[in-house]
Length: 319
Image 1 (tube, rainbow, N blue to C red):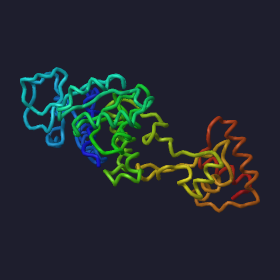
Image 2 (image 1 turned 60 degrees about the horizontal axis):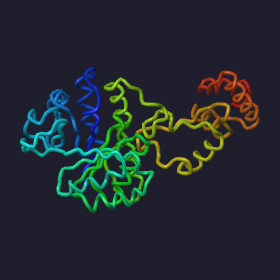
Image 3 (image 1 turned 90 degrees about the vertical axis):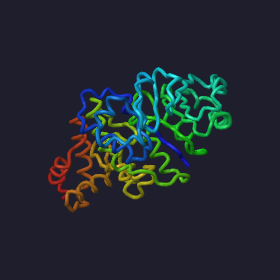
Image 4 (image 1 turned 180 degrees about the horizontal axis):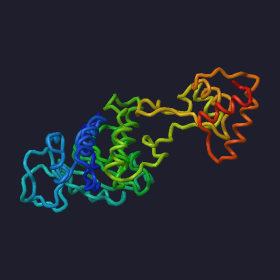
């Protein structure tokens, strides 16, 4: 069972152009999706105002001497052993060959391991077993994403024997994308329900507003186009049994499936969209309509809108 998940997004982002309202809603929704702790800097903590919950917030400081009392944990760029507060000790491990250096941290009860980019290129299971054997059970893994494996690494770390992990929303700052890890944990048989992932579209909108960055349409879990289907074979399969092509239903993450009509569309997709428009397609005109759809979408170099499809269907006598 997972003990703790920490989100570092608001520590990594430049939020100077964001509104206080957006920051507060984003902070609140992170807990809603299943995050246990949110790490913020002093400026964000000030702007969160009354919604700030110190018992679920890690305060990141430039200097340990600037610490304000009351937070569950603290992290610091310049640690000070003279300050007696529950500080997270971050140790960066660049690759698997440096794991042996962590033996000096065996008694550390508040350790965060950052890095291990290349772990999936090695025997990661053996490395995980060594970390669990030699370090305190509260050790937190925060893999970085130089090799594109951070979310998978964090998921494997948490699935095996539980434990603590850290990452960011949408992989901000080059860390594991927590929404990907949370979803992967949800759809494995080894993990019970945690959080409400249907609020992810709202979180994404807030993230884009706060960061000024657009989430790519093909971004795993969050992308606006990941449930858009055009290919005739795929559409037919999804309409018959969606689990053949989709590892999880779009509703789980607050999304909707869309059938795109274009040069690869087949009978099933065209019928589906026409019926969605409240029409009753005629079999005798359907072959001609399919040919017209392929011709027009190729000519326009894009998919057709529902209105354009209806217009073509009427021209070809398919409705």
